[in-house]
Image 1 (cartoon, rainbow, N blue to C red):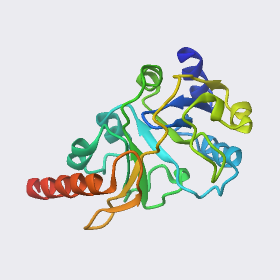
Image 2 (tube, one colour; image 1 turned 45 degrees about the horizontal axis):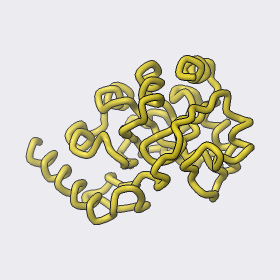
Image 3 (cartoon, rainbow, N blue to C red; image 1 turned 90 degrees about the vertical axis):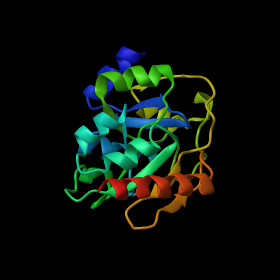
Length: 200
């Protein structure tokens, strides 16, 4: 399944991969068509942001060099989606315009093996828009199953989505509380920002 998932992503198809939180609908991060297909399959607006997931922080910085490396290394890997400034407007098809949502999860082995090969993917929960986040394969809607070329099963996942932290302003803001409690996320984000400020 790992080889099949890698081949599908490289061919521009969508796959379902397990993450450290829920099952994700993933595609080639370099493909605008894949982003459009994700939106269509989930039944949501094309401009709604999709995260960029990388295997590690170094690979994430290769894709978006303008990101603050100090903050990334302080918070990732972990169950966060970080919204960060994207001044070069890289990956505009991910819907963030001058911001970008990024993740470096602690991936299950199968998904880690896929990301080892492809480096990064665009990803969002493998649910229909507004529906529950799937923690098991049997909770993934039939529409998503039919639309994905490959589905990698890693049994039951924690089931709580990532905590989304907006780091585009001077003070971090919780957009969605998830796997990391809001108070903990804010504390770590503030400490990371302070450390980054001391280095500059």
